[in-house]
Image 1 (cartoon, one colour):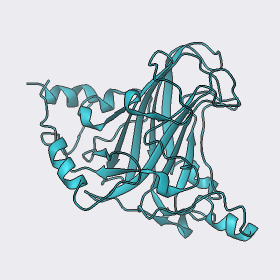
Image 2 (image 1 turned 90 degrees about the vertical axis):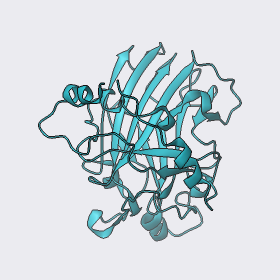
Image 3 (image 1 turned 135 degrees about the vertical axis):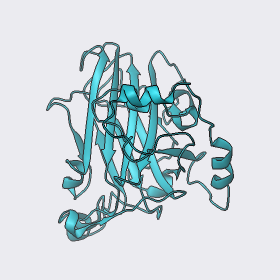
Image 4 (image 1 turned 180 degrees about the vertical axis):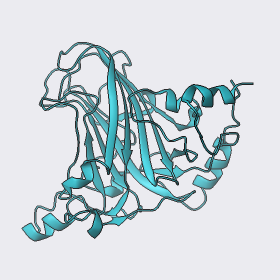
Length: 286
């Protein structure tokens, strides 16, 4: 297979040009060429050509409860991407867990316009204020798929704009490749998500909201966590694994990390016409 020249050096230069990350080191969002966006079927073939610099692996994640790193207990990778053609963010993830059950999930928080600030937990504000602004200018999503919770596969937006967690604004596909849900036994799973970005997710619906428009070299704010609740489904006794380790990121966007929206990788096709993924990948071969 042809190996594309990684752009890590270019990205580092761009990422350090007058931009300071909220938490930790900056990550990179892969740009999918138009027509090469992933099909949300739980298969990771669509992501196989993406260079390693875009992988966010478990060994570089943080935990807030002091549990030692044990990749036989919890292991994962995440790849974040975006498309200018669809104006969607994409997440591809693989998870291996030694004791899976139906309260474990990705909790993902997003601040697409990178403005920071509080976006949930307005306990001192009026009910009207909370209804309008909870999850509006930054969002929290609980991504249960492909974990079967008691109600089946699902995702949710944890804010007043519940519609933002439903198709076509949040879509997914996933599957188990080992084990089964809620067994407290070892399992492995794969999942893909497509998310519409919002600068203001209004409870009245998408027509009253402001969609964020992606552009190359933008900096966006993001955090993603996996609650590994092995001994007790109601507590994080084992570990709470985070991309950046920002304490309070479920309500404060200043605690997110930063991702750079990368330019196109060299050598990728710019469109797919009447091609299967097998044909596309074959075009990469020497």
